[in-house]
Length: 193
Image (cartoon, helix red, strand yellow):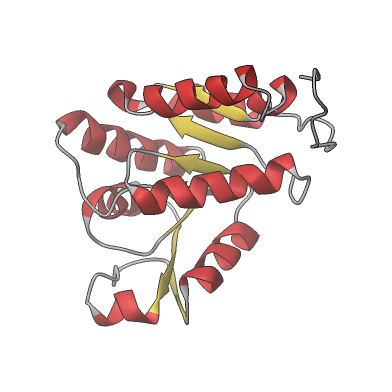
């Protein structure tokens, strides 16, 4: 993997563990010579992970919509900063620039971005690994929801396996490097899982 897209909060959250994990992720990406692709912000966990990548001599590529750039949340010291017209363009470019996707703690935007690339994986639109960094159990309720969707017949068991998870950056990157996408048949018939 040459570049990994990291989705995360524009806030730092309530626990110091979130920023610690963002710093660790950024440093590890740089050490492994994996470029960061992210939302281009200088605030919250986004800024923490980008600053850690840059401090360790790595590549940090941001993609930010004009509307957010005008609000002065764009990170000015990145390796590259792409300013695009819309959130849709942002997500498409981030996906094109990346070889895998990680969601760290964040809010609605993080959930939406991760679930979109996860759906693209399920449909066979891309074969890239999708991982959740479950810092301090942050994603435990979402992981339980994914399990519930399998139990209720809305997600195939093999597709539940496309959600890679770990509670530390090194373990998650190892799982992502070993990822092999399942067959792309999506639809579930009654009684099938």
